[in-house]
Length: 249
Image (cartoon, rainbow, N blue to C red):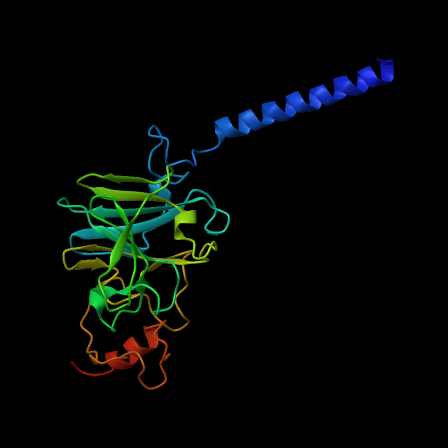
């Protein structure tokens, strides 16, 4: 081999070694992104302490936190992490609206009042189910999870680590997911409302965020959100709630 060729081979070998060293270093200092690792905690890279509550409750379910193993952009992350803080007792069920719209998935209590339609359910024992029927039917089929799926329950919290590929529809991941938690008749967010969103959705201008429960008169009809100038599709209940809230009750 000529001297120039030897120099070129040596340079290429150095580049390869440096590349491997950088890759190993990055892997060693990066937070674990695999929920399949039993030694890794079920928490986002910065820990749950850094994640604000997406919803706060006053019953059996105290709070709901949502995160990913990377950016909030669901197209870039690999894993969705859901944590529900509870007051002891049995684990709650977790519902996910992965498609959007009310035509696909199951309605809360199979009622047309439901603002979300739930496509995926994490049972109280950690098993996964996908809705398989009309919105008014309680029809679910069990889903075989991938190795990255993990579920953990204590008397203080339930955490689910769900690969985002499981939430894909026809091979396409959702841009946004709505999530709610239920134990008995205690829901967070409240029953019939949309689930908490990831990425977070800012409140519409002029609408105050409500943190404490209150009474609200509501018309129990096929489309109660279609009142006056409210959005008739029901994707945003803020205006309908504002209208109903003007009544003395």
